Image (spheres, rainbow, N blue to C red):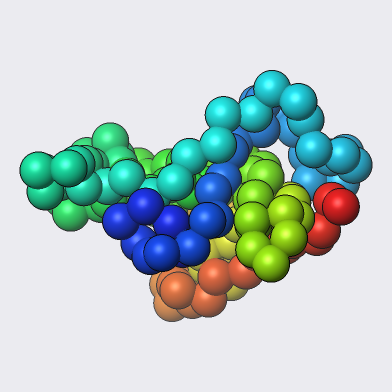
Length: 130
């Protein structure tokens, strides 16, 4: 979760880049991004789901980094995170795995994950764009 909206007092927002953007190909902040703060509760405290169909999954700004059928597959969506304090900076960000790398690749290609899964061994990559 980002430190913004219902997740905290910060001015951190994120935007998903267009489909097929790769982490390595993103060299600058795109002009047409739609930045979001965390809004998984409405003003009247109604819960906003992430749309995955899993009970209790909050609709966070980065929720689309995964999909779920029989295992947690990576979408390889790349995001730009905007941090406004102390000065505005932009970070490119991608969650690369939830399982161990070998098991993640199996999940992503076959829809199944071997046991033991190595779950919750999350890996991500990030780099400043400016």
